[in-house]
Every structure is written in structure tokens, then in C-alpha cells.
Amino acid sequence: MLEKLKEKVCAANIELSKKGIVIYTWGNVSELDAETKLVVIKPSGVPYETMTPDDMVVLDLEGSIIEGHYKPSSDAPTHLEIYRNFPEIKSVTHTHSAYATSFAQAGTPLKAFGTTHADYFYGEVPVTRELSEDEVASDYELNTGKVIAETIKRLNINPVAIPAILVKSHGPFIFGKNAENCVHNAVVLEEIAKMNYLTMNINPHTMPIPQYLLDKHYLRKHGKNAYYGQK
Ligand SMILES: [Zn+2]
Image (cartoon, rainbow, N blue to C red; front, side, top):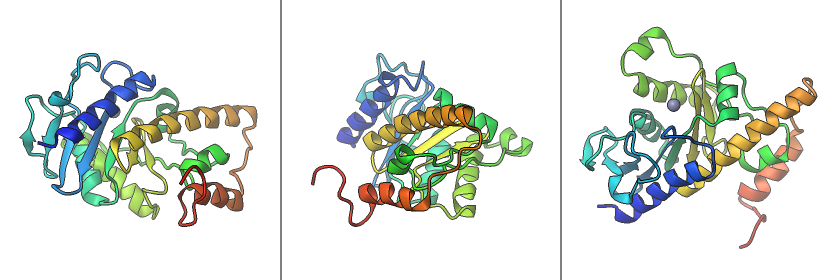
């Protein structure tokens, strides 16, 4: 079942490790199959070196295992809560990449300081509130998804235009139109977080880029009259 998608999701998970933003088994990628509404996700704790498409786990949106001989990633309830809230999100990636995670720990959003940011994120990448003791004590992973959804809705963000969020004291969750695109966004987010850190160190008073420049860069790549790259 969903053999092609399992191959793609497996390759995307391995790519996270190859790009150096994930060590051991820290990251996870899933993708939603638009037709069946089933989610293919990385298994829990299987090393990237030996992971095969056959190890991927197929879940329905309520979290029942439809296929797979391993347990799904422990973060699966977070992924599913994101898919249930935002049908426009087709893939979710979670990492503990160092710079993005450091901003999450500090509770500091990633301001749009330059055009690199604007090419991928149409504004500031936000941070969620801290989860409460009760939210951590039971259904922790589900509640992580809920605080993500709550933050995106409260800030009235389009998660396609700003495809990432930092969970306070935890790390980034990144969105995409498919697993490959999502991992690409995760790698870019880490690079942007690094640049953000350096910028804030060079000049703590740096202002976000002007709206017209943010518009120019984001919209030339993603707007309805996009002209960046090859047709
Ligand atoms: Zn995590």
C-alpha cells in the first residue's frame, strides 16, 4: 500500500540526516496522501543507516495503524493534529537542528531580516507558548500539535506562506507540499536561523526588512505571477 509514497518518505527522512540537520534518530518526516487521507511516517527509533521504505508506517488521520511492522514515530500525534487542522499542509518535518532549536528554547521568533528568509517565509517564523504541566503530563505529543494549531490560528498565519513554527522549549516543526519540499524547507529554516543568530550578534538592533522587499522576494517565487526559476 502506498509504495511510492513510502519510498519518498523514507528518502526524505534519510535526506534530513545526510544534510546534517539531524543526528541519531532525532528527526521525523511524514506525508499525507491526498487521495486516501492516509499518512506515511517514519518508524520510531530505526537508524537512518538501515531504514528502508518497507519500515515506514501507514496511519489514518485518527492515528490507527493501517500498515507497518514498527511503531510510528512518537511525534506522530503532533503530525496528525497538524494535518487535521490545516488540510493545505501535505507534509510535516520535525527536527532538533541546532540554531532553529536554540531560537525555540529562547522563545525568540525568527524575524525576517533578509531576502533569504523572504524567499521561503512570508514574514516572521513564530514561537508557540510553553505547554502547561497538565498538557505535558497527558497526551503530550497531541497537545504539542494543539499548541501549534492554536498559535497559527491566533496569529492568523497562512502555514503555506510561513511553513514553519518553533515550539517553545522544544524545536521546529516544518511544513511542505510534499516530503521532499518539506525537508528542503527544514534545511533552509536551519540556515536562516543561523543567519538570524549571526545578524543579531553583529547588530542587536537590526530591523526586519521593509515590507516591499519581503513582498518582492516572496511573491516572485510564490505569488500568482511568480517568475523565479525555470518554467
Ligand atoms: Zn522533538
